[in-house]
Amino acid sequence: MQIDKEKYMELFLSEVDEQLTQLNNLLVALENDSKNSKTISEIFRITHTIKGNAASMGFNMVSDFAHRIEDVFDLLRSGKLKFTPSVANAVFLALDELQKMLQQLKKNKSEPSSRPSGMLDMEAVLQKIASGEEDWELMLRKMRIDREAPISDMARVPMRKLDNAINLVGEMLINISKLELLNLEIGSSRLKDTISHLRRIVSDFQYIIMDIRLVPLASIFDQLPRMARDTAQQEGKEIELSISGADIQLDSRVVEKIKTPIIQILRNAISHGIEPVAKRKKKKKSERGLLKVSAVREKGMVKVSISDDGAGIDLEKIQKTALSLGMATEERISKMTDYEILELIFEPGFTTASSATKISGRGVGMDAVRTELTSIGGTVTVESEKDRGTTFKIFAPISIAIIKSLLCTVDKNVYAFPITSVEAIRKYAPSEIHRMNGENALKYGDELVPLLDVADVLYDSTTDYSRKDEVDVVITNVANRLIAFSVDGLLREDDLVVKPIDVMSDVRTVSGASLLGSGNVVLILDINEMVRKASLERMVTND
Image 1 (cartoon, one colour):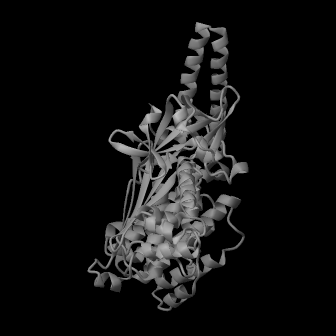
Image 2 (cartoon, helix red, strand yellow):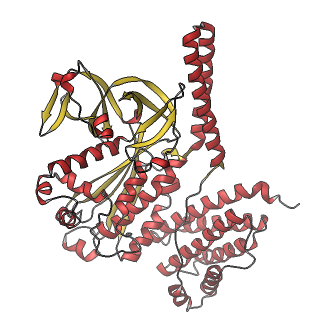
Image 3 (cartoon, one colour):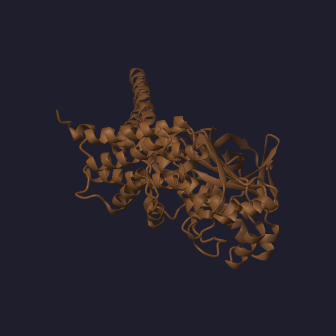
């Protein structure tokens, strides 16, 4: 009986995608232990499965090509072939060709009419390896194959359907809020109970949809060993990569947004951070550069740390570059802390690279990284020590579709603080607000916390606290740094369905918008950009 391709296509593509990721990771492991018979057998088994499943779907090109890889591992399994670095490179490139064909199948739902040239070349190489010919390594060196493998955008069901479901949940929440406002006028206890019950049902439905949208960070982390291995090989460096936290789950849209920043930072660590073997020996370091990628949950956010034990970031070079680009004066730079100097690498147009490379980009990398993260309410920080290494920390929300927020009023408008960034809310007397080094600050616990006024940041106004009886303050936690914001008034917590506001893309202090039950639009504040804007304005004023 013939298989219904349409019915099983999505399942087949999803399985092959996962199997290719497994094969890449197993090959990286085999490079470190080339005689591990269990790893060789597992690679043979997975390749055999791909071959069989592709044949049953009628994809003969994929099946035949997988059979060529299988032949190589059959020889390895029997001990008739040694797993050398050249054999490893050949198989890695063969997997790249399979990945390309997979993308073709996703797009066109069918194989091309003829084999792509890259696949034909790799088939010839694999056949020569299997038959014991010796000229295949020369063929391999001449080949030019793009090794990038995109992350799958599927989570069992098409994401557009889950997006539609979230939008419907948002509409239900807005209309429940309208009913609550209406009942304030009517005053019906029965209607109040019914509305409360309805809100609980919709809330449960919301969490079910949100749970379906979650995918593990493994969808990114599983690609890193291969990418790091290829980058280190191109750079002529030795590395050792450790990964933890791959099981932590985030909204699939968040995973899409943080993938490029993670990969770019890791590539930069290998290209710019890790020293060549000769230099590491002189510094009495291990020949292999150590790279660590880890993820942990932290206060409603996910923190991804990417660290290396390389040369560290040259602060003096950053200062000279900032001066040459006119980003700050000598006087201002002399007053800057190490933290503020490092922050300059995230400024638009900042680069210390003398030339562009394929690996490390074209000098707009770190600005692009922070921009990508702030678009979802995240941020990135950096710590570095000379000859000890560098650590980048990416902070990202677990979800960006519906967020719990603290509503407040500023100049008669309603704004929202994402609750994940709120440490506390307090009322302060004007006498408790201190002026230090030209900036406002207040005591929170044992710590002196900088105070910014939301209206001052958004509208470039100046607030006189002495004219107020008391000041409503929202204390936020920005990448483990406490920053306080004063507002005109505090309203309530609410679940907001986030809508992008591309029309206001230059307004970085606002990350999105939502609609309240009253029909009013509420703008969601980007706390990281609020702090950044205030900091830049202070630099200009001080200069």
